[in-house]
Image 1 (cartoon, rainbow, N blue to C red):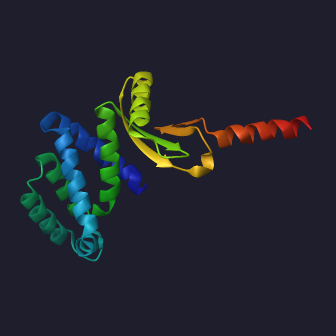
Image 2 (image 1 turned 90 degrees about the horizontal axis):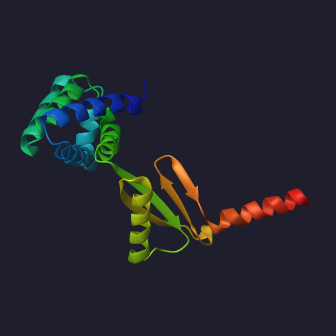
Image 3 (image 1 turned 60 degrees about the vertical axis):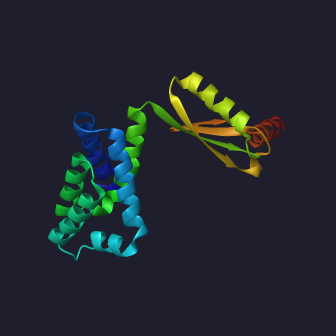
Length: 181
């Protein structure tokens, strides 16, 4: 089983328990902080991911960190279980999947919009509101710039891509002209 698939199972279980016993948003914030802490400290990351270090030693490290960070009970229990099973290597994927599930639970969509030039605040906000109206969900908008688009925009919402770029339109016109030859 892939790391991502395994992380998805643990994230779903954590979400279910967090909804019942704690605040899922707080758990998500704490999970993100813990994952960032581990990733930013190479010695800590190497220790927790090293298969040569006994699971009991990893558990002690996680217990100490969980205590110092005052982690929510469901998160603390999950991290200890992962340490016992020597599965802390899935921590980055676990955090990514949990954050996706948390946004879904909160009915928030992540939208990525790519334009040829940087969007000003007003058009970006108008686009975000339009996407909210279309989807019926809150939208978090991330803007990128790709001059190759020439104009228009490309929006990615979940797994769906809406391409309204000038470069794509020109490519389609070119295709039609070549077919008509």
